Amino acid sequence: MKYRKTALIEAEQYIGSPAQVIEYNIVEIPPIIGTDKPYEYFIPTLEGPMELHAGDWIATGVNGEHWPIADDVFKKTYAKLPVIPYNVAAFIKLCKGSNIDLRDVLYFENNGFDYVKEDEARIGDWIADHQDKVARAWLDGYEVEK
Image 1 (cartoon, rainbow, N blue to C red):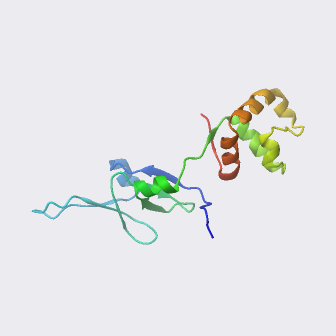
Image 2: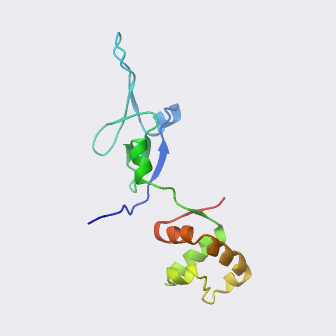
Image 3: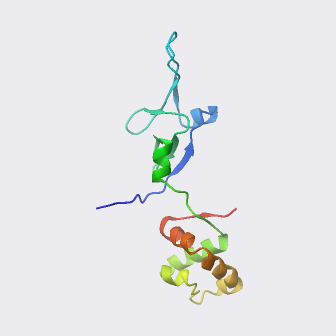
């Protein structure tokens, strides 16, 4: 059987900034004098300290825990949430709360929501032009345009 991850995470790429060192309690271990060994960086995790390299991603889980993910693994495993307009996000939220099917959303059947009438053309046109993004937002979540 195959499985997909269902929990959302927040992540940022580690660049070694002093702010990141403080925010994530990163421990810097200097090299032994007289060796070519570089600084080593460790981040505290639920499993104990884990090594962190510049370019790795620091993930924050649903309970606020952190862990490092190598850049290549991160890019194969995670994708950004779709960014959608506020009115489309409100429509999705309203439809989900009213047990409207995704099929009806993708074909933009407003199902008698009065507030949608005012903005119907813009919502319907945007959904028609971005059906993959709407389906992904429906299934995985989304961010609202700023």
